[in-house]
Length: 252
Image: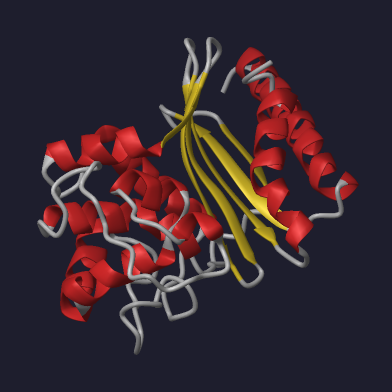
């Protein structure tokens, strides 16, 4: 390797290290334990903080991303507008206590909606899809309606992004029309500077914000996992992610 190339690589490494230090500071200043990975579409640029390849977590409601595809592919619901009738049971979260659509069920993380369909999908089918998607540790457990909430399914920060790449590229063994429906549901923020397709998740101490952000210049995949010790920590799932994008000069 030439002297000039060596110097350039060193400069890039120093710059990357400085940028990642900015991200680390965000977690430390806010007293949040977590890990984040941000990757460019071509995979050439990766920013990370506290990412451990062997560490995985309960996916919680981020599993609604693959689960939505499974429900659509199985023909259990036609589209994002079909009504999911409320069962009349009052739950602690008011937005759940009414009829839903696939769009509202995804956006409000309506647990009972997805549990109803999980019973129809069944454990055998879930295992089949998990293998096809290469999603997490491929495990479900004893309860088909809760395996992504407090069962045996686990996924790492790295694997979250690997799956999101397949969603973005529509490179999954799912009809393309269903992936496009999912993308319409996942679009969570849109302005002149960027668009975000995302999902939050929370179960016990596991808090997530995952998805991808698109600017005029680039597409970035992200997965942020934080430890939830009190309800006020939940805001940091998205807050730290967006602050990281700003610290890295990806958005203003």
